[in-house]
Length: 124
Image (cartoon, rainbow, N blue to C red; front, side, top):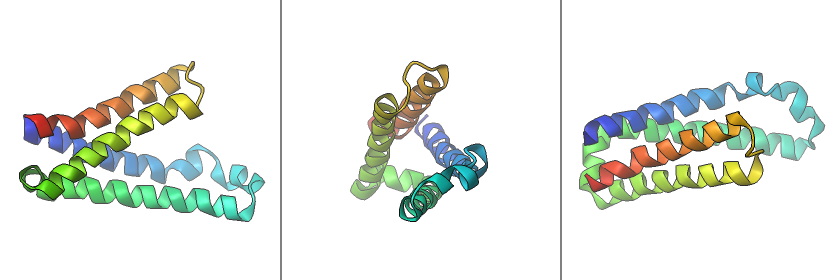
């Protein structure tokens, strides 16, 4: 069960990496970001690229070292940190986005699932 959840956590991160790669098209960033100052436009894109990198690294690490992560303090810390990352992201969805829309509510659920995928293997 733990290895299944870890695999799902890895796929989850890789899926979010792909999703973030599509932000330029999905959210029409070429046009929309033009309204920002050059510095803020750059910050938005750099932050997104760094998130893509983090999701790729964590996803790959879970696939390559999942069982080792569960056996080491550093690995457990990383899994716990990713669980908190997704839990906090679900709270931020409620704070910064329109929580009354179906899409926003669905994202909260998706983020809570991500938090659980990283947390539950720590307790099995």
